[in-house]
Image 1: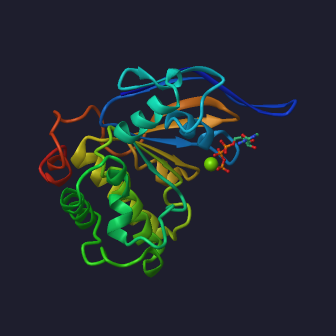
Image 2 (image 1 turned 90 degrees about the vertical axis):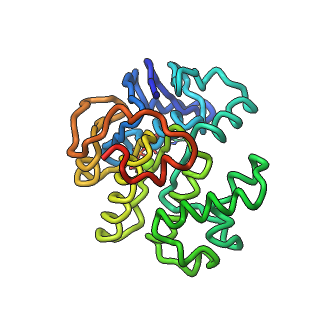
Length: 249
Ligand SMILES: Nc1ncnc2c1ncn2[C@@H]1O[C@H](COP(=O)(O)OP(=O)(O)OP(=O)(O)O)[C@@H](O)[C@H]1O
Ligand SMILES: [Mg+2]
């Protein structure tokens, strides 16, 4: 599903070079849920942004569904991201003057999906993340945890193969954090979607199936967490996968 090969990255600002990642190698199978764990400055966000195609590595390769994304041009990458990748931000990144439902539907607007289909999909996902009664509110009318649920629903609406999340619970209190982690674990178990989650908290990382440890830009350990995740259930097409409670548990 995801393969990182000999990945190195150095930031260049003028003449100053900042090496951040050094020869990272690992593979993630379809349906796995993994954490990238490391202290501040260890290179977690840089690695995640590279894997999500938000920037290009200075060396090495990133394959998603067998395709080396670093070789794609801007347009190819934009299209690939739209159809294969979901992203969840620490600060939600919702559009304030759009309703909850409009925020979730936005990626489908770019896909040219017609309004009735968009609405059906967004309502299904919003009910799945526990926000069936909030769909017509604006983001400012929701709590932080609820806003993150909106952002999670938005990340899933294009039925991506893989979802990346950068400190998805970084702005939340510990109770809400646990609710969001539980939701992500549930979505992973029931959908077969691969999740890669950046965190600096051991307790969060331990709850995923696998932990990739980063230290000073190097992969130091690859250990197991508590969750039972792994190679996915046989593919279920469309949004049925999200809704089928019997799958994968
Ligand atoms: N655009 C940039 N130019 C130069 N250096 C950068 C740039 N972005 C990040 N860095 C450096 O790369 C290193 C890793 O940063 P990164 O954001 O990946 O760390 P992180 O593990 O996500 O940290 P945090 O937990 O604080 O979010 C840091 O030393 C940072 O200063
Ligand atoms: Mg970071």
